[in-house]
Image (cartoon, rainbow, N blue to C red):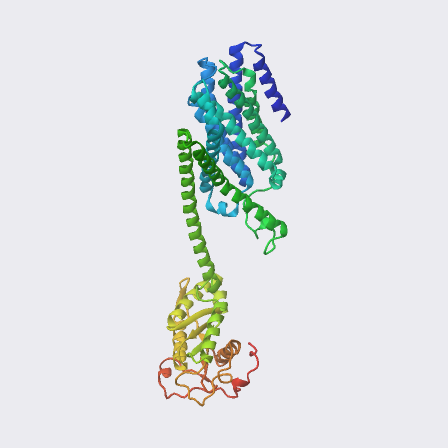
Length: 569
């Protein structure tokens, strides 16, 4: 940095001393300014490619601003060095110079930080909104300056109004940038993180503001030329901006959300995490409200002037309308983006809700969701609002499928069997209870529940191809009625002690019935009838014959006395 500033000082002194003659000094001055602008553009752009977050955003914006300034300087140098016009009148060069603050304002606002919400909106949205914010800020400040002081000065000036207007706008826009830097420096978080970058950037813009102010003064006084020495601020300013971009990297400024690795592993985040997030949100609100705050100030000032003078300057009206139109464009873009974010959030919430209630592999309800349905069925049965049948389904020897075809083949089979199971349950819900166990809740009487269990067993036995080989899987099903049906005799006792069975007890009974089927040779169905007796359910055509006597389980205890779950073998 010392070497760069030393070279800048040497060039300024050499050009300002006129030891090489006026023409050569002007040429050196113009080449130095143009070289400084191009160098600042390149350094800002190159360093931005290796940074993230705020570090990248402000450098890209400043690179664009310095590119515009350099283009204006190229035209200015052509006027002075090629055409020998010391003070060019209004020209295309002014367009490039005035585009510089349009990019510089959002570049400074980028130091406030990028919130998770703005990061989620996308980079294009952030850039467009930043540029519109810069236009609104600069336009509002100029309207305020013109309405209060600048307009009266221009109208009373003896010189060309357009030329004086352009000249006076330079220091005004530069001082706006300097004021923004001062405001950023007084924010402790920003000052601690970006102190060196802001110091160099502020010093560079201040140097350019000094030279711009001298230029405006010379135009106002009718000077024929601008001394080369007074251009030193432009040369030094561009060099300082380049040094600011080349400053060492600060802490990582990549946008994150609370609970991420940046903020720590705590579920709710540590105290510094919450404070940092709050500061980011506050900074975002500052960015959001600043343009509208300035527009509000413009409106108040214009209203006061309208009451006092009874008229408004046409320039104020035109510029004010332009600022309002830009702000409306900004608002429309923001509303559209907010609508897109809301739609994305709605879809994400729907997906999270689905995942919270469904199994990730089969798409069936998961265990927790099934528990809610079972609880509702029990409550409805107790209140006399109907009955239901609980089915617990376990695949036979499913481990052998995983051993033969791997877990990928086993997962494909589970998906297919889940589809079949879902088709078999016409009125009710189906869930994957875990592993190779499934549950179903049939909203019907016990006979319909038994028939459903038979359909399930037959559907599961249908062969399925895995890697070109046929696989058939049997199931064991435990069936338990919940509550009384219309066919239940009034004096009969329902399972597990009349209507007092809760969800856990019903699941234990279904589990016991299912494991009884496994002990009896697998691929079977056992059900508790309305009298509390556990019996086998015939499959196939035998089930359709009502006179078939079910197989009774010898020594089976009264389910009302069942205390805990059986021991699984």
